[in-house]
Image (tube, rainbow, N blue to C red):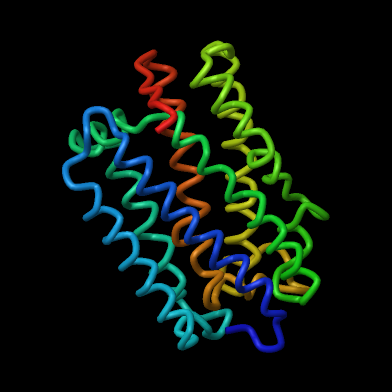
Amino acid sequence: MLPNLPIHITLVFILTTLAGILIFNWMLKNAQPQITNPRKATIALIFWLAVQGILAYILFYIQPADAFPPRFALVVVPVFATIFWLFLSKKGRTIVDSIPLYQLTYFNLVRIPVEFCLYWLFLNKAVPEVMTFAGRNFDIIGGLTCVFIAYFGYHQKKIGRIGLLIWNFAMLALICNIVFHGLLSAPTPIQQFGFEQPNIALLHYPFVWLPAFLAPMVLLGHLIQIRQLLRDKVVYGTKG
């Protein structure tokens, strides 16, 4: 864990991750057609986060900035490999096309506490300013607008397909922006930003869960919505 970090930052981030897991499980349970044994997927996710949490806690990801390959690849590569599998394989596309967009859109709520945590981490010299809403990160907009989109776009169906696509492409650009700056400001051989204050927080527990789960899940959510909307085969889901 980061030394001398105010406890409320860690607690807020852990609670945000737990909320993300609950929304993930809720979403799978409402898949149409139903995903076989969604509990197993949730357990697998918890196991993945536990492994990443332990590795970060024992400072496994802390290594010289010029070390190659960077150990942090053990976080990033499996995540993006899973996303590619979901869209390139037949079974993966079946899962993607069964996810209800009503519930999936609510996952964006995690963006609000995450952005506050990033700002607090910046104040405690653990991430660069470029990763916060005081810098180049406007990702909080996705969290502030997602309830409106979920309710009027997918539940009430008062926002048309074009409007939903515009929102998803815009919010996808925002999450790609923070992923880009986050990866390139970490102290690795590919660092391009934040040399005055590298992104060290994401190498520590529990903040490793941002690149291991929260950020990729937000990104995946927009890709799923865009795919269903472009194919005009939207799984709306229900309020339950």
